[in-house]
Structure formats: structure tokens, C-alpha cells
Length: 329
Image 1 (tube, rainbow, N blue to C red):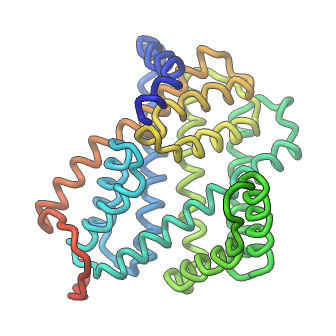
Image 2 (image 1 turned 180 degrees about the vertical axis):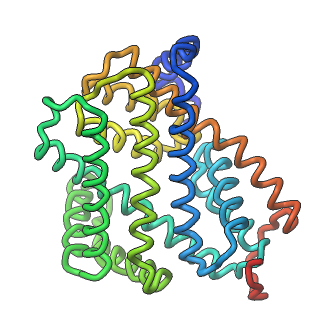
């Protein structure tokens, strides 16, 4: 499946890599804000996990997330493998197995829910702001702020109101049953969504509003890195459509036929940036710059994080149960 997926997206992936010599036209100073934006994005994820674990130390949380993230991008279907590695590293650092599994699950759910909310908000922002007119990256940044506020407000409603969540689940369930008519109909999706929402509330407790801030910040700061990459190549995209392009790329990144959605993200990002008004050569170069920092750079960093964690806590060993209850230190 991985070979087939790479075969399908290889032309787009090859076009992105072939623009490598054009990197000399990008001023190196642009690398500073792009890298800082990605670091801040990762820091939001660490803060979210720290909140879920109710733990003070940053080191075991940051190293486990970096290592798990890197591993998930190295193997096909890596999301589950990356989560398992993160779980084992947290357990090795002293977190009980049950609490580590619960926290990793809750963080994954709230992060995915935030991503799922982005398409609706991005389409609304396009309709409100008139995307075909504006061609200003500052305008895109202001839209990102509005989107962030929308995510926080929408997340707060879904965390405390059953009605909207049941409605969303009902719509998704009905759509799924109509598309997959030959399969047994799904009947419990709304209730399952409420159960997963309740899990998030139990884990986060009174810190739910901080969790929404961190989850929104994780995605929006990654978007900021893309905006800086576009500015670095001199692009002047249509404002709101850049947000939609980012959403498409983020969803394609969840296609784990290839490691980390490799090739699918590049193809989707180049195509949607073209819709946003970015010339083909600039779209390809901006995609290369963005992916170098957001996809390729975290992999060697994750290897280093794994090594540092293994030196302090020992190599993680997968176990079926762990009731020692040690405190992370």
C-alpha cells in the first residue's frame, strides 16, 4: 500500500524535491521565525500533555512526544506506533500505565477534534472576508487569530453541551450510513462522541480552557510557519484560502498509507496554494521550505530526544500493566 501510495503521488513529491536548488534564493534569516513557530507549536502540545498528566516536569513529556512524533513519520500507519512509543516512554519515566494511556488518548482526541473544526471555520472565514480580493499575509494572520477564537468558543460549547455534539454525531452517522449502504448501519456514533468528550473532561478537569488554548495554538502556530514560508518565497496568496490549503494539508497528513502522509501532503498543499493564487514555482518552493521544518527536521530531533530519555530513565519496555504508581520526576 505504501509503494502504491508513493507511486500515485510521486510526481508532486518529485517536483517539490526538484526545487531544492531554489532554496538558495530564500534568505536564511527566514529560517529563524519558521523554526521558532514550529517550536512554539510543539511546545503547545507538550503543555497540553502536561496538563492532562497533571505533571510539572517538561523533560519526560517533551522527549516522549518528540520521539513518538518522529517514529510515527518513519513507518506506514505510524500514528498508532508513535502513540504506543510515547506511552511506553511515559511509563518508563514513572507515569502509571493506566494514567499514561488515558492522558495520551484524551490529548489525541482533543487535538483531532480541533483539526476537524478547522474546515468549517475556514470556509466561513472565506465567505466573510472575501478571499479572492485580499492578497496580504498580515490579513491571513488576522484571520488565523479569528479562527483561533472560534475554535476556543466552539470547543467550550462542545465540552459542556450535549445537544450540538449529538447533532454533529447524528449528521456524520447518517452520512456514513448513506455512503456505505452495503455495510451494517452505524447506530451509536452520537453516544460514542459524548463518551469520548466526557473522557476529555474527566482528564482535563478545571483546566479545560487551557487545553483549548494549547490545542488551538498547536495547529495555528504550525499555520504561522506556513505563512512565514510563503513570505520567504515572496508569495502574495489569497488570504483566507491559505487557511483552507493548510486544512487540506493537515487532513492529508493523517493519511498514513505513506509515512506521515508523505507525498499526499505535498500534492495537496501545492494544489490548494495554487487555488489561493500562489504561482506554481512559489507554491512548490514554499511547500519544500515548510515541510523541511515541519516534517523532516523533527525526525532527527526525535531520535535525540529518545536517546536523552533513555539515558535518564532507561530504554522503554512495553508491558501489559503497571500499577507501581510512581510520580514523574
